[in-house]
Image (cartoon, rainbow, N blue to C red):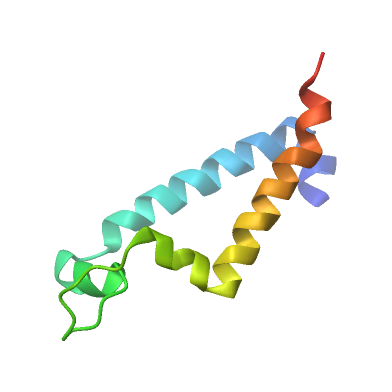
Length: 82
């Protein structure tokens, strides 16, 4: 609120842009040797077989996320109609 009262309503958009630049620049701080693609894809160090994308539906948390995103878009569909 202090930012808006001092610099006006447009300052919100400028601050989002600045924070986005900081977030994008922070990606440059990640070292390549710190990344492990095998673990990032859900495999353990001993596992070589990749998990199929249909396995996502067996996890209740991911399934609830998919349903929630679908319901959100269905709920907003009437707003888009002219």
